[in-house]
Length: 119
Image (cartoon, rainbow, N blue to C red; front, top):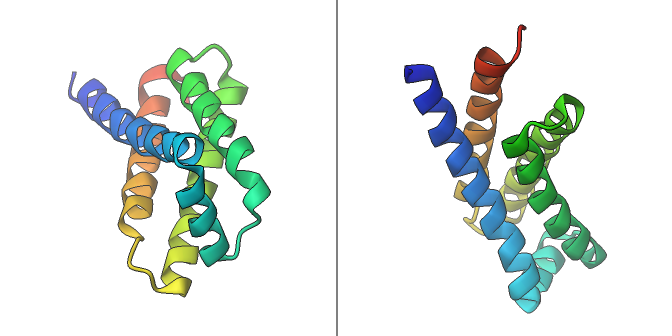
């Protein structure tokens, strides 16, 4: 029971962080454009990244495909690590959501494997 609570809390935080960022990319494009420019990332990535974040959450929550679920976890971890590095290098002080995303993603992945796989 304790493992399920940890899993759902971590997965909930992870989902909220990535859904919030996808929503910001889609609903506040100008702000996202400014962030991407400031961080030195190509701005054409904004819409595909937003769509992939939404699809990644769906892949994790539905558990329809283990392969897609694992790819989503990896993508979220890479996204959060790159965001942490970029915000740290730029020094804009906006690194905390990345730290939360990393911790939530890793915790969710660990407990997903404990609860839903035979690994």
